[in-house]
Structures are given as structure tokens and as C-alpha cells.
Length: 374
Image (cartoon, rainbow, N blue to C red; front, side, top):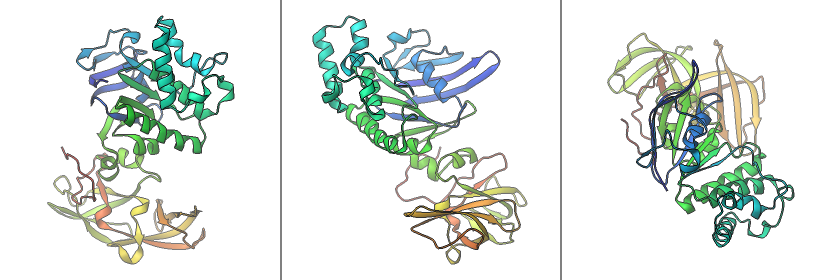
């Protein structure tokens, strides 16, 4: 397998810049997920690695080789697209072996690779079937198998699960993750689904408007986002944001005041904060608590109540503001839309963001999360 390195890589179509000065190192054997909203440039970066797009500026390396001008067929990469792109008139064996037959590989080698890939992907008993006789998940595995047969140094997957239903997506997430662990291969996976990113990746690259917003392990991004965009994108439901004013500042804590006049200290680095600043706190729906258990309380009217059986999500319009928050509680909560509802804010769970989106460093460490703050 191989490492992949982006050095100040940019991609533009005329005056329209899609990817901007991307610096990124993907280690040999890493499972890296590019995630972000539509139009953020994640698929464009993947296509640059594959050689399907020409890099406008910067350098791209696979291992130590600069590949900007290397033909796609000679880069040692294999790509799985959103579309299965299977030949409907060929059976599974023929679909998986098609590339090797074009390169005139020996039949014995073709048989060996196809059978090996089919065993790994649990397709050995289906090799004589045509694609129309397969489920969506099986077709996706065939597309992955076709790439696997070519034995690439780097696997590239561009939203391969977006055509599947919810149950199949969960199943295929697990299968792709298991395959990557089994092969120990370098894999770059593109998705707009942050749940896929959180459950599959060794490392997540969050992209926004063509730039890298943050790179890190899934729980690092979840608990310690460096900016408001990452905080709002990672997590489902997304993080709540509440406007506050700054009452007092110390080196290791900041006192914030809510619109209902409640104030409390939160443990964050205060070196970039000034009294009187307008900022926002962020807190995840599942981190809100009962009114009596928090350092401060907020309340309002329940507008939507989603009772999911294992949990309840309550959308609350805050009293005296135009803001809404989501409260998430395990199990069933007996509340109906239109009722008043109050919840507590635990200070150690709060994030603090400047108006430009920068996060103040949190000083409380979550259990089991270790990372480099730099």
C-alpha cells in the first residue's frame, strides 16, 4: 500500500476555485474520510488523486513519487464510484475480471485474484449471476471487488453507499470497514454523511468551501472542534448554538451571560476573550441535562417532539429569543408540542465561539479522548 500527500494543492475551473491550498498527509494503511456539504470540494480532491482531474497548483505524492503528470492507469489507484457501473450483460466473474482481461493478464492470475476477492466479499457463490439478479448491496460489493482485483496501492471511494436504503447503508458501512482492516490498505472515502465519517474513519478531513476546516480522529472533532462550522457539521442532531455576552474573563475560565440573565463560568481558555464581547456557546443536544443539574437553565416552548423509542428529541423555542435548541434524552419523555419545558446547561460540556467562528480551547478533557492540541 502507500501514503498520499497533498502539498498546497488547488483546483480551479477558470476563475472558479474549487479546492484551495490543501495540505494533508494520509499515512500508509489509514482509512481517511473526506466529509463536508455539497460543493465543498471533497470529490474533486478524490478525482485529483485518481488523475481524473488536473491539479491547478501544488504537488500530489503517492509515497515519494510526485504524480501530478502521471497517467491515471499508472498511479496505482482504484476507484469505486457512486454508480455501480457494472456491465449488465456480463456475470459477476466477468465484471470483476474485465480490467485484467483488457491488460491481457494470464488466466491463472485472473482466476486467483477474482476468487480471492469474491471470498473476501462473500460473493463466491454468486459469480455466475448477472447484476440484475443481485441486491443493491451485492452490486456495490461487486464494484468494490472489481477494484480489489486490480490490487491498487490506494483505494478511492466516492459516496459508494448513497444509492442504498438505510438498512443496507448500515450493513455496507460495517463491511467496508471490516474489509479495510482486513487488507490494511490505504483508503480515501468521500461522503456528505457525517455518521459514515464518524463510524468508519481512522481520521476525518472536514472540508468547507474548498478548504480544510479541521483534520483529526472522529472523537477529537466531536469533542474539540476548532471552529463553529466543524462543531455544527459533526454530530446528529447538530450542536445547539446560543448567543451570550461575556461578563468576566480569567485565564482558565470565562463567565457568560444568557439572554435570560443567567450567568455561569465555563472552563475554556480566556486569552482571546474580552469583557463585553458578543459570542456564542455551543452544546450538543445529548449533553443538556435536567433543569436542576446544570449551572444555568434555559426554557421555552416545545415545538416538535420526536419519540423514537430508544430516545426522545425535543425542539424548544427559547423564551424571549428567536433561537431554537434541541434536547435529546434516552428513553421516552412524556411531553407534547406546545408545553413549556426547561433544561439545564452543564458548564463543562460547553464550547465557546468567537463571532468569526473560532473556538476557544476547552480545558475539560473527555474520558478516553487523547490528541495533540497543536
